[in-house]
Image (cartoon, rainbow, N blue to C red; front, side, top):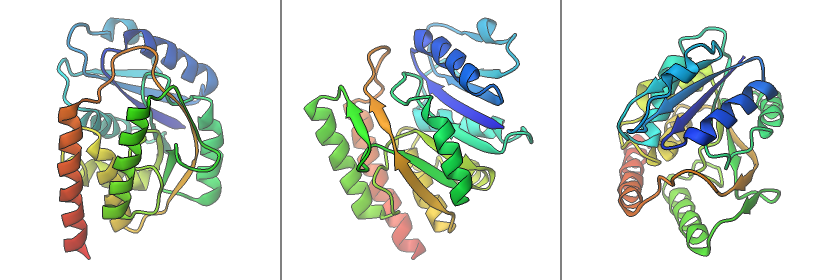
Length: 235
C-alpha cells in the first residue's frame, strides 16, 4: 500500500482535485494532507473519507515540517509499505507514481527522487529567473553535499519504511522549509541507504499561491552551510 503525504498551503481548489485523482489512479493507497492554511479548515469535507487523513495546522510552519508531520502519522499504519511526498498544485504528475513504484521495487531502493534535471526530464512554464535560481540552488547543494543526485530541491519522492524511520527521527533540525529536502538526502546518505532518481515532468503551478520567497531562499542558503558542516564533521 502507498501512503501519500501532501503538504498544502492555500490550495483548497487543488487539494480536492488532486486527492480524487490519486484515489482513482491508486485505490490501494492512503492520503495524508497536512494543511497550513490559516483562513479555512477542510476537516468536515474529508472526515468521512477513510482513505484521507486531514491534518490541520492553522498557521504556516513550513513545507518541510509539514511533510515530516505527515510522515510521523503515516508510518504508524503497518499496512503502508511505500511512502510518497508530493506537492498539492499539480506540478508533480500523479500518473508518474505507477512507474516510480516499479522502479523503486526493481532497484530495491530506500529513496527515489523524481528529478527535473535528467536527460528525459522536462520543465514547463518556468520563468527564466526561476530556472536560474533552481539551477544555482542545485549546483550549490551538489557542490556542498554531493549525495549523488541531480535534483536536491524537488519534493516529489518515494521512500521505504526504513528510510522514513530515519527521516522522522533525525530530520527537521536544520529548518522547516525546503531545506528539509536536502537534509533528508544527506541523512539517508550518511546512513548508507540506497538512493536513486528517475526523470520527471514538472509543470509550474497555474493555481494557488507559491511558497517560495526571499526569506525562504536565505534560510535555505544558511541551511546548506549547516548541512555541509554536518557532513564534514561526520566524515
